[in-house]
Length: 283
Image (cartoon, rainbow, N blue to C red; front, side, top):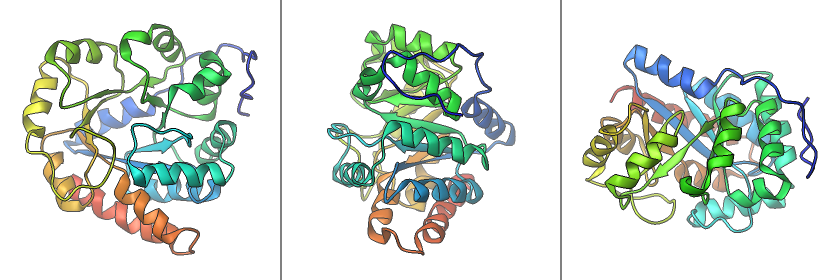
């Protein structure tokens, strides 16, 4: 049963659960393989579709699923993901309903799940309460877009107590001294944003990715996942040569927008992510 997200209510403390993100990257490393992280907007077009897509992605070879929690002011996202957030809100996707969906996914799948969200959603109900409920539902990590690591001491303490991975972003403009501070606080993996600006599909990948991931590796042994702009198997294969995983979001979200509530949604998205997974594995 998922604890209710009510301000001021705390669930009893429980021990950290086994973290699926760390286990998955360890398994990939032991096999000498690269990983595929897929992002979708939760509740787009509705939460039952989110559940079905999660299970299909697991079967298709996705290693980690990022679920974007719908928010009215998604500043880090480009138009494709902004519209997905609007559709998620329109379908009635709230944090409590999303966590119920995560719990439903957990009945059939152990795919690692990361929530991609903005800090206001945690603040509204209380960070401790939100993390209690997220861990109980089966979430493995959070990527909070607008929470600076330097201001996250309490958040990190609570995340650690729940066995959740705090995922942090590093951008092309992040100076070397700050990279060192960020990676010390991270668990699970480092998310390298491969270009400046917001999320969105691109025709080419940034030529500096190999150099930048090498710079990050000078400070950490954590896996590096590269995202923002990767939209097809050729790009996925190219970027995977310089990282432990690649992240594909907007290209998948855009296809969801095109298909909507079509009966072809799940099989077509399954075929798309399967092609991406095969490309990553062949890198």
